Length: 187
Image (cartoon, rainbow, N blue to C red):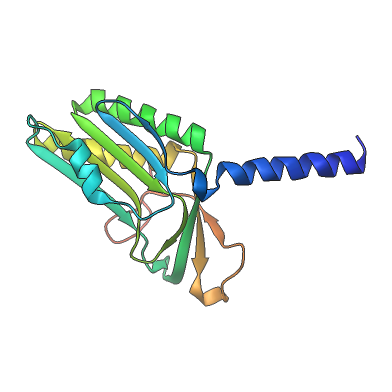
């Protein structure tokens, strides 16, 4: 392949990739009567998540909001940015929701994840579930969150304020942490 043809192919691939993540093409959703999945660039509307999961037979509605904090490993964080492979991420999120819904007997589930820049104190993910009783709601919501962190095709980039805003930021893998922020080792 000639250099010009290769450059043209790379430019086409970059253009296609940028159009896939173009905020004008969002929100992107996948849903059923009991599951709502969405990837968005705008701030999360947590009340719409709760409106979706509300049910006359549900005694519990659980809402988790993952919020950008201003530190990581004792370093000051200035912002986060999320990127995704949207079609695959929607499919993975929906599969996670279906599996957890069956396992815990949840009535309805909403998972909404932000893409793009998410500033300090803003939400990057909302997980809302409804269930007959609180125990299955708590367990189901937590399992959804952990499975999303481990499996969804969504990537986080972190910018630290103590590095003079490195242009590329740092790609960060999700790791399980305890209530004090310490990494939990899984044996």
